[in-house]
Length: 339
Image 1: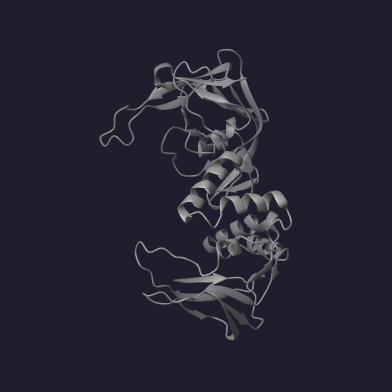
Image 2 (image 1 turned 180 degrees about the horizontal axis):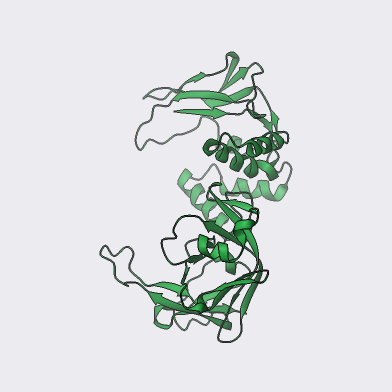
């Protein structure tokens, strides 16, 4: 395998994803002068070094081999890892890149056991909350050396899904998206939240697929109005269909809707789909319900310049990130916003 690496000494974690996204865009549009300028600007928030540490320990089936685009001036070995030292080398867009050619022998279903104890691998580093007693205690408990690797992994997974909140906004990936937490209830479960308003879902498509893997209705979300300034677009006109997709956290509209909202003449607010499409903020989206409307303001949407495969727009879960919703099964075709 071959890949470029920039040796890092310190990182601005608030700009890490921003720089990564710009570098991904550079691979697709290397001649984009504005993107290249932003890469150089973001790179100034990082401190780069001249050392790379790579795993080099031999296994019965072979040892890793590396070659570098820059000459190695020194190397030191510590356990399974070798530190390679380089002289200062030319920067590309503000990044001191070293290209690595690596040959890594592998063995199917093998298990790697590091020479360094687990505690050493999870000890204090400049990037770990040094001295934070609670965090260190959690790690020590989860990765106790008296447990097997599988037991530690299971405890770590259990802790993450129990304590980490995935319902917040995620900023700095290919687009600005928001996630939603999903809970399944049996019918008549007393824990189902009280309903504040009900939005209309209209089933379409074949509920039975040939392979069984995609069986089940899909749904249009009805009575939805997009608005930006004085311009509006609504499925209530009778010619548009908006697909409700619980599998995406983006909301996507086609070119025709974007043009009617006047977005074609506006600069994009953010990138979608790895910089290949434009994203915008519009004033509001209103969904008419049986017990009142559900309205969200300053809404993020992506514009897909080619054809959307299902309907004229895809309504994603980012529209519901601040509320609980209950999808009341295919027999009623109802989406409830809860108190």
